[in-house]
Amino acid sequence: MAKKYVNYRVGGTPEKKDENYTVWSNDLLTKLIASKTVIEPNKSTVGHRLMESEVVYVILSGRGLMEVIEYTNTEDGHGHDPSAGIMHKDEYSLSTGDVILAEEGDYIKVANESDHDQLVYLRIFDKPGWRDRASKSEE
Image: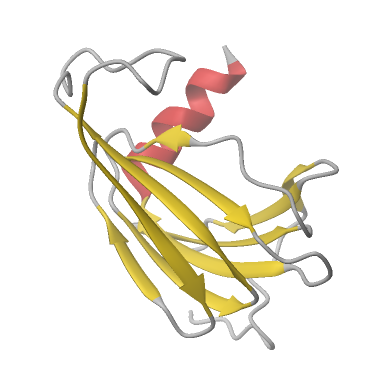
């Protein structure tokens, strides 16, 4: 049964909350995850590599910068060093209404460039990668 969320809310309690950003994720659907991220002024996400997942980012409010790195060593990964095996690197300026399509294997880091306003975006992504990540973090 469908469920309606108002004002970009995705439901659930924060999956991650610290002084830099807060993430809410909703796994009501069987194939997709809806997630909302709020980044505080002059803060950023820690950055992560998309493993077994593709992501659609929709910028709801604020402005920022997205760092996207494509690696030559996609099979083995880069570990915790995002400078190892870089094949291509882009930076995208972000503002309200932007949509970014990120591919499996991309390393993504998002920064809020505002001194005063939060940067808010939705992420829509496939469940297998999220489920794998969630189960590995419990181990």
